[in-house]
Image (cartoon, one colour):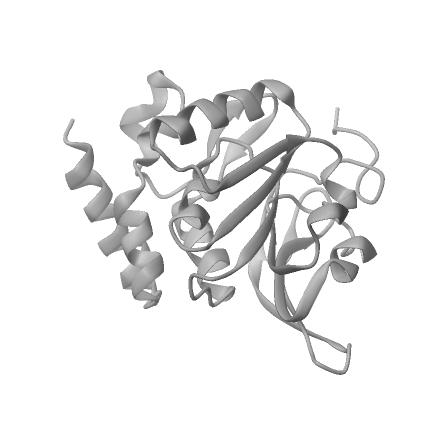
Length: 217
C-alpha cells in the first residue's frame, strides 16, 4: 500500500473538503505517517475516516477530529502546549510539527512507552511525555499557551483553567461517557473565560482525580 498517496487522499477528502483551511495544520497532517501509530493489522485502515482501537480501551482519534482540535488552537509555532492523553502519539506528533514544545501526559505506561518509541523514530524531540494523572495537568511547566485534552469529562477541570496562559486556548470534549461536545475556551486578559461549542463528538473518558473516577465496565 502506498501510504503517502493514502495520506494525501485523507487530507484532501476528509480535511480540506470539510473546511479546514489552516495551511500549517494541513501540512502537518501530510507530514505525519499516521499508519505508524496504529497496530500492524490495522495499518491499511490508518487513513480511513474514523477512529481505531490502539489497545488498553483507548483509540486513535478520527483524522478530521485531530484537524479540528488542532486548527481551533490557532497555533503559530512559538507555543508551549499541554496535551492530556498521549494515547497512540499521533496527535502529539501533529502538535510537535506546529509548536515549540509539547508536554504530553499519559496515564497508561505501555501506551506512553510505545508512543515515545515512534516519536523518537520520527525524530520529534520537542516532546516531553510523563506518566501521571492527566486531570491535574502539569503544574511545574505551567502556564501553557494551549491545552488539548483528548478525553471526555463531565466538566472542564479547574486545574486546566489555572494552568492556561493569558490569551491561551483550551480545547476538550465535555459531556457524559457516551457523547460529548467539543468545547473551546479562551482565557482573556481580564481573567475571564470565553467558551464556544464547536461540534458533537465522542471520546474515551478522562480518568483521574478531576475527571471520571474509573474506566467504564
